[in-house]
Image (cartoon, rainbow, N blue to C red; front, top):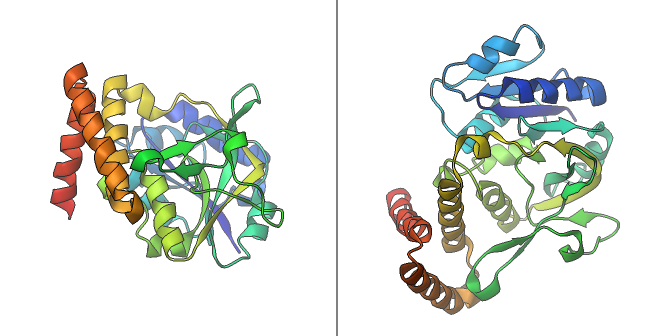
Length: 285
């Protein structure tokens, strides 16, 4: 079983350098199988780092295609059985190879989410739990909200796209992250829920740790209003694809309430999110 690493990057050579150095330092056993997709649009990151990291295999996008497309290309180009997908602002804190080899021996395991820490070593993200209060999808992040381990194995409803391992052949079979959610957010949740519907599981590996700086390219390149609109839009798109049938009436009531509230409160971000979600749903249906 070969393990590799795939990293989409965008105009972020310093963060990527720290990421690659952390792999060399803490996970040398997989440092010879790294693929990076430079999504800057002009190849600036590759031009700066190629000579410094000769084992890395590079793909250069001629335009900024977004996280989902870049991640898909990175996983596809990575010649490994299990691919660890990392954001460029994530650093490996320990060698995950042994634990990944252990959990992926089970053929129904599709993905594994790693535990992320803040730079000071405190807990940041772990397992995720998807719930549907009043028919609206919501993610619980806190450790106390998670499911109890089964036979010593922690499960997660999805693997965080910024620090997750995927079985590459299943990932490609599912066509990776769906462009419905372009440019970012909720595509990783959608992927794992689609996998679950085909009988595959997602697990959580709390002993496989990464440091997530948190100063991601997405947040540094876009303002808060745009990010909220995209998040709300993709949350709605996810709901319309995966809504449990018995919650349909609750979802319609919740949606009506939020639309009325948005009108009264002049919440243009929610209104934009709703109508762009409808337009995207029609265009891609």
